[in-house]
Length: 154
Length: 384
Ligand SMILES: [Zn+2]
Image 1 (cartoon, chains in turn brown, purple):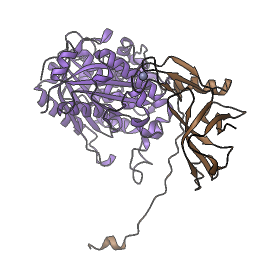
Image 2: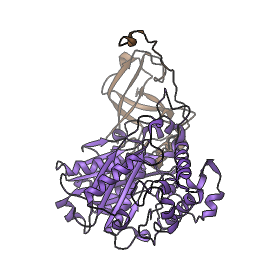
Image 3: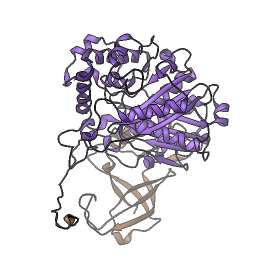
């Protein structure tokens, strides 16, 4: 009797959770996305206490927990702080086919980095410290991909 | 027993069906900011944070990471707790235990939910065992309807009894500026509302809300400095028993009976109906507001209909239940049970505004979820 586990036919149920979702962007990031979509501008917000400038904007200063009511327009240029060249294929996650480059862009006028794609340059030519600028999509719908990528400043 | 701990501040959002102006993180920021203001402290005074929600309601994960700016948790110890409907009281219990341990002096518990972001029933269904009970018996309404049917048959409770409790809580919500549904409701209105799942009707059932709540707990020395009247924790008890729905006792509620019994023992309460001054109870449906009275030991088994009909639990009764309007008025699920703790604390602290019950010395707050899990808090004006 104790040997029944050796002979049982093991069953696995296939499953799929199908639940529709919507994410409320919220006042702070809605303002940021609308400025990006309608005016083609990248804005940041500044802490009234410590002066740190955040892009994307923060709801409260991470250090001071102060309300963020000062908005500053950024020039859209920056410096590559770090990056990687993606060489493997992950179609359900990745925005494009490999090889492609993404990294952290330290935006001019801000104290924080923006994570985005780096393109318009051969992957092997990308360098830390490279000066880049944002390339905006022509058709914008208020999404992070309204910034197509960052490309080197010639 | 641990250190003695009191609530020194409470904050909550203005709850609504859909807070389009606020992301989940912004809801959290609203509640945290208000709790800090209520306690007259800053984040520098907070030594640790416990946060909770139900990830399936927002299709997110790891909120303790990316809510940092709203939560104010940068460089602080943060723990996340998720236990279904009880999440809020489990957050409260974990925050209380963290302070009572003596390792942290001031601990903030935060519950939140943005129920507008998903199909709540579909998300709740994912809590049921996927290879056994999810298909035939999942969601919140069916099980609650089933248990009340049984209670009606056993003890002669009626649909009207539940409607009396629904009208009580919904009308109480008119005194609560934070409540989601604030409307005058009669027993007839409840009886005439659409049948969802016999005997549960539309106005018997809780809504789904967007909202957040934050409660600040402090150890005795700190609490005495921070608040003129802290709401001292006399008991915090958690009981779980679920294996499968078919295993549950449907006629009464063993987890609630055991949790309340232990809590009353810890708090030195022998006659809860008389000794408690106010109750903020997680009653997800007004049928529970009848049936579960037995399991709170507010009456003998089967006597709940008499208790509800007598008016003893209305605002002018011997034990007002849910001055805030309770869960049938407001239900941001991960915050719902913590709102019960916060409201009970405010009753003790004398800060409950238009819904204040005069002279509250002892209060009970509960959480329900699970399925069939019970969390119980007893709070008091005097040191335990
Ligand atoms: Zn700052």
